[in-house]
Length: 220
Image 1 (cartoon, rainbow, N blue to C red):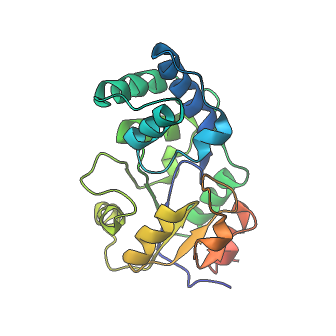
Image 2 (spheres, rainbow, N blue to C red):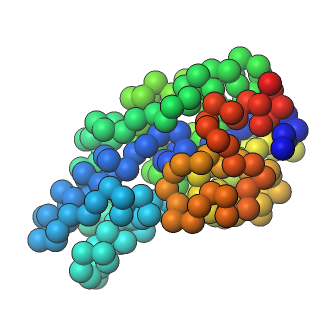
């Protein structure tokens, strides 16, 4: 299956462009140890990612005992720890850099729509030399986040691209749900952070590899 060539491609970040789980896990384990909890494994954290920082921290504490009554100071502590090591172990998935280059070269406008806090998304993309490919990056510091379609709609508005053909590229159910609710086609990568296999999430296309994206978008 091939989709109509879009003018805009909107990408999720964690689990789609970058494997961030190792650094997220390391920061979570620092905070957990400060609260006399045992650590969590990378494999477990991959299933905690996707609904924003507070929900991920909440899930980590629930998995190791109980959730603190006031979670906000714990979340802020996590953010401080993670900001100091946002790209220490995180790596760009194979084929991502080359594919982004190709999409830009053929005239696609690219954006990121992520539930990750804005400054951390910017910091990560800059550290891994990906930021230059994206016209806009819209993080989770907004009133409505994925799976709410208004997050995607805001991304298109900031890009000045409302009303043009666009496609969402992600790795998980939130990406599918937000794209469907917003009337956009959606492509999933075959890896990422989802407890449900990508093939079962209802995407238009599930790639075999990230490098297959241009062909899936009718770009050869």
